[in-house]
Image (cartoon, rainbow, N blue to C red; front, side, top):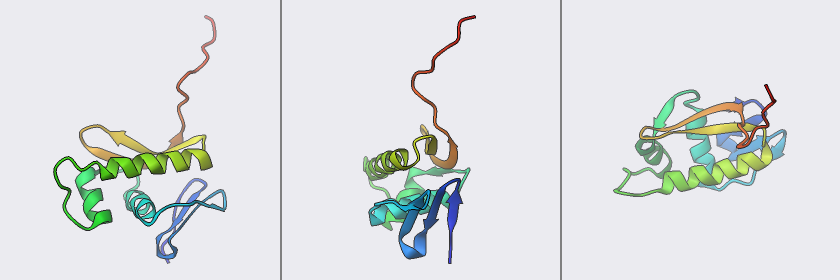
Length: 113
């Protein structure tokens, strides 16, 4: 049985299950398949075309934004479950990379110098 882990995130593709800190995440089949496809290539940039072919089982057509839409949904769900971590990183013009990294807050307080 395949178990993919990244910090407190556990993905069990054969069981159609993902957990964050032991809590089951509510993911659609496509979301789970996309998460697993990215996690299997942890640390590597995976092109959108490859992700689409892996998850949807067909070549990416034209301006189809399905991968981007599902990445957005996954990021939102993962951010709720594990807000201090970022897992899916965009590499504009290339694709997406899966790796657990501390979240970067939009606004940081700066200390006076």
